[in-house]
Image 1 (cartoon, rainbow, N blue to C red):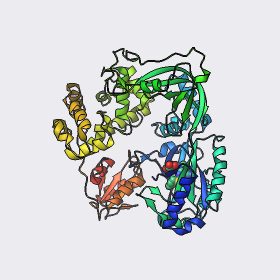
Image 2 (image 1 turned 135 degrees about the horizontal axis):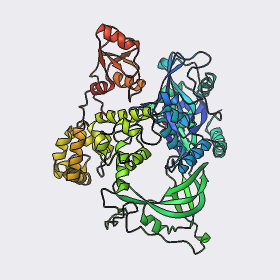
Image 3 (image 1 turned 135 degrees about the vertical axis):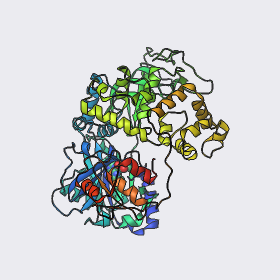
Image 4 (image 1 turned 60 degrees about the vertical axis):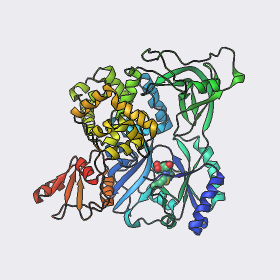
Length: 591
Ligand code: IVH
């Protein structure tokens, strides 16, 4: 899915036009379409013959996530298009969002139930889309706005982006109503100023205005930067809003590495239309440097995608009753004496079995960046820990559905889905396992370098610190952390257990592109993680063809859940049938 470049002020917007005009001089006279930039979760909707066949989210950025069942619960989303003139097959892009009112109601409900609240409507929307149980999604009140069409061969009859929006609306797709066409940037700036004032009054989160070259014929001429960023559109973003409220207390969160992070508990305050009641304070030094005290009136800011932050106190409003704060000397979760290495800003809880650390570590293991276990979020992990069903990540692979149904809010169907999602995660490649394990300093990039270099976990585990440090892109800090991690006896036991439980410990070899050239694949049913459009794209980038029906020429049928008649036909013709895991293996794309 595409992303957008930002323009933070009018000058940056002009610079964008200047760059474009150098490539395609006509842009100056092509007019612009201005659209409210909704801050939610990007979705791609595939319509075939006017029927919704698939809906996907951005996923991890590379591989989308099929969320068709959940999207179907959004009332505003037509399963069948109205009118006529739609291309036989097209992909509609849009943004799923949670109205502010629904967001506030959801958080209030969760607070009453003692569950953590969502930081912002965007997280809430994305989280709601990832629910395993569509009835939960349905209860959240998600909405959707559409703004883009991709159709093979440009079969859409529209000359301007503003026509596309009108057409989408004619087909019954929801379109944000405040879009407008303007003739040039000067007019655009005036309208943008009006829109900026309007945004704060809307019941949905918007973090700017998207400015698009209105004439569609210029879009291919302008092209995209690096495959992802269209030159024909730019996001004109607005400065973050600031509000003043009272800081009731400073509390401390324990992270998975043991780092203690202070945060502020605030009198709830609306910032940019969202009620904020907590904000991060980063570390003790910052609190001291800004002289932030409990009881202070503080300025708090919140930019769409960022966690709310405390900027600083209003000193002239002090009464003398404010309390200076100090990092506690004992961990708030387990009571262990807190450590602070002299050259670091963060204090640590040194106890690796600290319940706070364990909780964060398991949630990280299951997170999208790691083993990507759908349905296993922060709270579900908390429940599993509290009920004693798990103590560490390896225990996840031994949990049975019969045990899960004893947990509150987990019906039999969801319990089975969760067990399946956990089982599927056993196949994640080494690079993701390395991220999931939470080795200090090892993020996505380092994990990939290590996985490609060593292919197998046992080989990586045996590597000496010097050998690791010599690898391009690794360096001494990561090398020390990795070597240290594998030398630790507890970690070794954990890895042995994971292996015994069937967790994959290697990285599939990447094949040269074009490896599958000449092959013909057919895809049927719902694949567990890949959206069909994405599977098609991955196959095509490797030179394979993807066709609609099974014939004697078909190389293999990729079958997911509810496969239907194509599976019967493939079996009859003796065509090989493979699952998604095998497809990914062939694509050499475990990543
Ligand atoms: S145009 C294929 N228009 O913002 C379309 N994006 O920061 C390329 N977004 O990924 C983007 N409202 O999810 C476009 N009116 C709008 C939008 C919009 C929200 C999101 C979209 C995109 C992200 C980029």
